[in-house]
Image 1: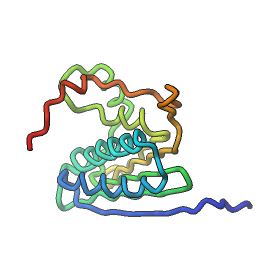
Image 2 (image 1 turned 135 degrees about the vertical axis):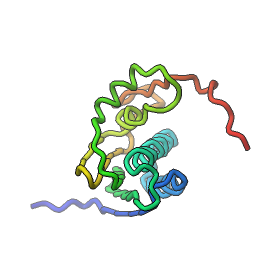
Image 3 (image 1 turned 120 degrees about the horizontal axis):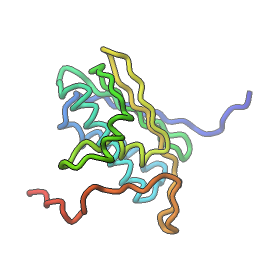
Image 4 (image 1 turned 90 degrees about the vertical axis):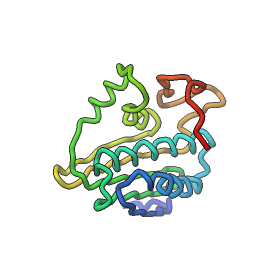
Length: 171
């Protein structure tokens, strides 16, 4: 049996399942992702995906319960980043359903997180233990999108609104 020469680094973070921890989780993942030297666009994508995934885990999976935690694990294997986000709400759902309605949705902001995650990441899997936990497993490989030459191995995200339509954040 051949041993892989790629060194594996594992990093873990546990936070209360509240939305106020979203920035801490994003900083944690982005710091780890920076070890891989992803492009600026890939780093933006990773941060966006973590924002969506953590918000779903805290808000929907754990219902923003301070008594519950969300566990975030990042594994670096060469030029591959594995992100695992686990909540302990134990509420199973059908990710394919939410991805399909995101294409048809015409109401405001929200409801497109699963679709965004699947379009950005190279691999996405959900694991459910009813009444106990939901685990989201995501993989991002460096260099799967060549934006400078207009080539991509995964679909380009089509936002349902113009970026100019987003109101400025109050300071």
